[in-house]
Image 1 (cartoon, rainbow, N blue to C red):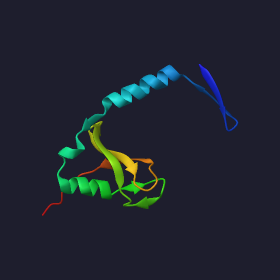
Image 2 (spheres, rainbow, N blue to C red):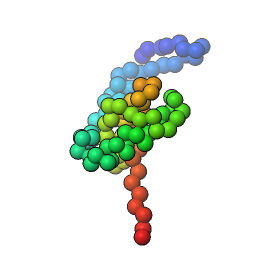
Image 3 (cartoon, helix red, strand yellow):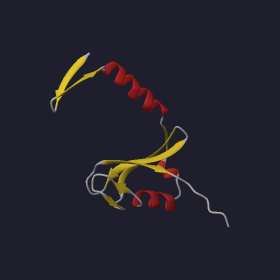
Image 4 (cartoon, rainbow, N blue to C red):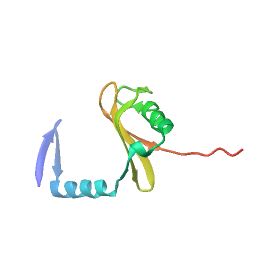
Length: 97
């Protein structure tokens, strides 16, 4: 058991447990090939983004990856401006005629 002091707060961490939970979470992700998407969809996903760090929309992302986790699709990549990691859930809606 490791004890860290950060910002005057003592926190106990069980690192083997955290590592195993992280590994289990990573194992659940099913990565898809981003290049298999149609060109229109690739461009839309890359350009239609939100950066929580820059607090601005449509800055774009680089190094896009798409994956499925718990039956939901996600797109992750790095902001073109600040380089911070972004993750966005892809929600598909269908309009009725």
